[in-house]
Image (cartoon, rainbow, N blue to C red; front, side):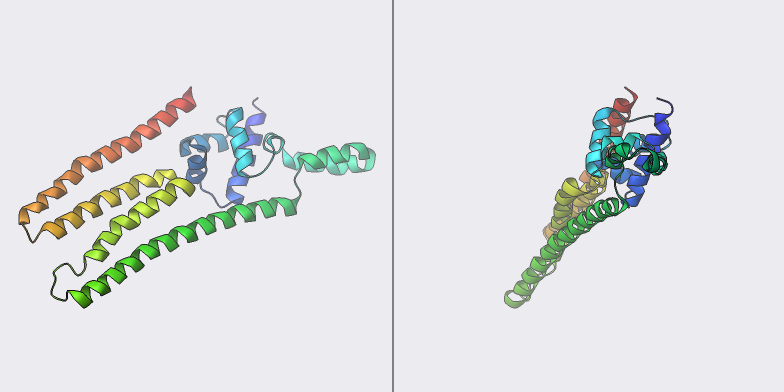
Length: 232
């Protein structure tokens, strides 16, 4: 088991780096903490079999690839090529070809870029609608004091769009920042909208203080739960 730790650590680290992922990105995909991933890559602990299978599926490799020293396998393959041709095909099945590995990594990276493009397009669409509303208000109600409200409310709406796509495709730990942005932009939008009626509406912003505390405590609670699961 001790000899297996550095092998798995090296393979996980190599796969993550070749895919241009941070430890936090990989942790988010596996619903673990980045500290757990760091321990795996430092050979301080080994993921259980279910996590190893999830890592193999994520990078489109086999479990054999994760638990074997692929450098040593390549040397053995070259040595056996002259002495035992029957074993060649068995070892070749374990070691992915270089072109195949590059294709897999390119596919995963391309998928992330596509997801980012879709997210950006949806956010831009929100601002396009806000601009259209601004133009319509300017044409039909030039004297209104609410001319810029479409752009103001576009901020929390954009945060909602970002939150949805980030929860589906990206690092879920970023959700705490997005939720904070959503909360404060919504409160500020309400204050600016209602301010002509009474300047006391500024007290609405006080709601953001306990709200921010709850978000912070929630984020720490999630990390604590994951760390306890790893220790068990």
